[in-house]
Length: 352
Image (cartoon, rainbow, N blue to C red; front, side, top):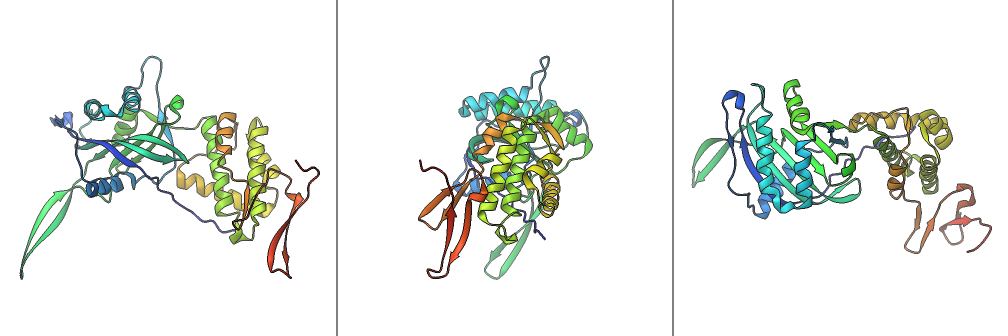
């Protein structure tokens, strides 16, 4: 029986610019308070805020900006300008705050503190890029502060932001601009009115579900299956893992239209492994909030882009690397009793 192991990876980033504004609810006669200068933080505060901003992004679901010929996405236009020149972060953060303020068209929408952050050195899906983060803190908690003075203690209560929970956040990565950028969301309030205000009216984003995204998601899921399930813990040799990755890559390169039954029969084959694959596919879809279709047109652009992430190298100690590109039957593993060493036997026709 195969075991399913889940692994979450947190991307690293550095805060380059950060701005803070106060956005009220105009339906409750709230006001917009724009800062006069960007925030200047020491390294400790940067580290604390960075953990608060990024720690909540655990989902791999990707969104992109929506637009039409009649109504260009205003926020997307600001993001394009920021990626062209991140020195504009503070000035553009005021435009973002003003735009968010104009979207507060319901009395139930909460006021909050709005952070606009420009990150560098982000890693998303193994790609290095910059990102713009927009974060809104709507709820305040009460914190106790204790002041010791020799043997006399005093206690005071203060209201502040709980940095262990992010109310609303979005990360816009500077990649796949032609598709409306790669975007990840957090909305821990997520009530109907507020979800519509944040996702639809302010961000105007939709979850990606085109052929590029389906192809990329399936390839990422297959890689995860090989690494986390179809592995040595389930008595699978490394050569068999590489063979599975090669078959997967070849299927997506050589096939025009994906069909889940055909893929399982042609690439996986063994009934027990197919069962484990189905279980992992369902878990991957649920954990990452990604709908995986049974049939779709394969995007060759996505297939070629992702192929480099499939490692077909067999590393033997620090002495040898064997690159396996096909025909798993031409390599055999054994153990030499006399030398007490493992070995691989490789069969070939021509030496080049």
